[in-house]
Length: 308
Image (cartoon, rainbow, N blue to C red; front, side, top):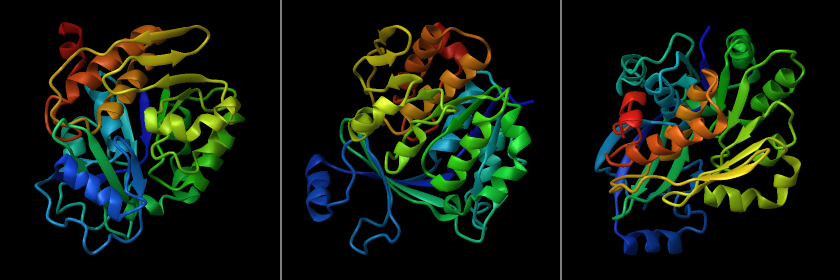
């Protein structure tokens, strides 16, 4: 039995380093261009969007959170799909080398998902996602993985795979007498509203742009709200409200910092840590991860976090 299961996206990240003026120009050119810290999904990439990345790295919110959970000490299984090009980018082997279980990852005819990550001078990011194989995850695939999901201690979900099969999964889990603790990262926020009233969603972890987008619907959610706010205090609204102050670090790239917090949160909750301890450890881990470029290169171990 895996302590943590992550059902979500597996991407190849194309990293573009840009100036504030270049970001402003892209925002003026495309009405859909993400805000700072936001992720948006698109179908076809505009021809005049910068095409040649400065570097190519492994990503996807689901995969990032799986790697973080392993670094936090949890046995972790990744569920999702990659394309026939996965070998070209060593997608499975990279996850396997990190200690993530990969045997249940499926292969689709679509190419592996792609994220275009624009990183500003202060390490802030703007992310555009093309789903690719992630968009082929359906109810049939999830049903095949149901026993693995149901027997986990924690289930990590994001919003870079289709909503309908995830909605069906949550309905099934809500009817179970025993089920995993479900941590939902509403990234991107579009369409996530229908999940907020589901009894199976225990934790919701928006960043500030996602929190603002969902504010009118948050009254339907009665679980634990963990507001990720970059370098500002994390706000936790549960039976009691408390805050956690992130450590001050020199951020190189904030891509994946929220994923790291989620992975550590799941791993800590799975081992019986208190909510406050789990959020504190996750917050430190997320901050430390920003000191290196890429969504995964800077993920610390639990020992690193405790030492810090």
